[in-house]
Amino acid sequence: MIDAQALMNVKKAVESNIGEKVKLKANRGRRKSFIREGVIHEVYPSIFTVRVNIDDKSVQTLSFTYFDILTSNVEVVICKNNQRI
Image (cartoon, rainbow, N blue to C red; front, side, top):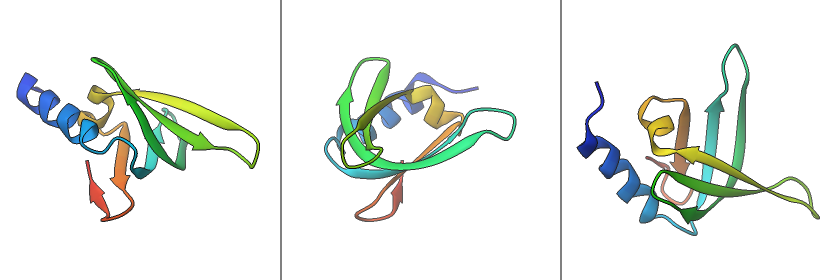
């Protein structure tokens, strides 16, 4: 069972890295996963957003919950020091 303190620790870790380049690995179920690099853009009470450059002209904003990190559905690694959130 996941407690509230662990959830707050993940939220603080994400908040402290706003604007940092990250590498994401998201598992979307049944052999569907993707790996992207982007920048942590915004932090909200229940979710955070990451901006990902698709190509030179388009940007995609992905959103994830802090619970996704706790349940290992999303792995977030800070690129500058290879620290996993």
